[in-house]
Length: 336
Image (cartoon, rainbow, N blue to C red; front, side):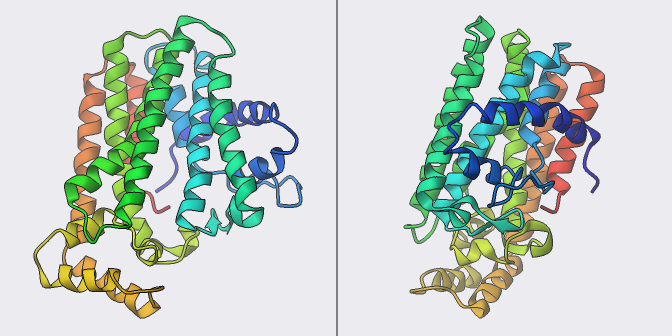
């Protein structure tokens, strides 16, 4: 599916602002951060590589346009949410032991764990500095909401880590974890532009719930790609989430069912040591055969429909509604 034009339009607006904001950090931090964002190579050479979709900044700018706000006023929120997102990515790669991101070594692999940790910490702090460079009521309001979203996101990551030590995880617990880990920040992104434009609470909250539901749809698709995604597109080996024994949505759906597939999958997940390629392939087969893949995609469609319903309830510009709707469908139908 072709990327929505709004993603490309906002990328041109946000990328220079993001680069300038990052340059406020210590020179010692820049090599890791500029590499992670895809702006430079390990050697510090500028490179026109893939920098990601910039989905969250796009939602931030569109939420301002949705309420007839000035997109320029939403830039601090767009930059801040992208920094928080990337702080979480850098740390997640360390926690999960993921050695690649976007078809090249992840930050901790390219540099060191210590370098990557402090770079992530710096982005976390810088996000709030960007928002609070002015102390207007709308900036403070946006910063408070970002504190809440970030705290919720971190609690979701903690739950995800706890799941590693559990033999099984219910679908309900998995959904709650993914709502916190992914839904909270996408909800913030989808409303911060409206907040910074001075929109009323009802409109901001409707946009936030749109993003929250979109986040659940996004994560459901991400869970499917984590098992069955094309490595040439995702940049990660097929079945990567199974190697890490992640209790993602397709896995939790099967493990929590009382079936022969759930018993066999549980046996594989309880194997001591690294899983063989045969075990990963068999686990993938069991999950798909038991309906885990289909049920997860149905869950994505369900939350997509809910997201659009909340968008319909928001008092926003028709043109921006169509752009947000297009992005929502793109998120669910993407292949990376």
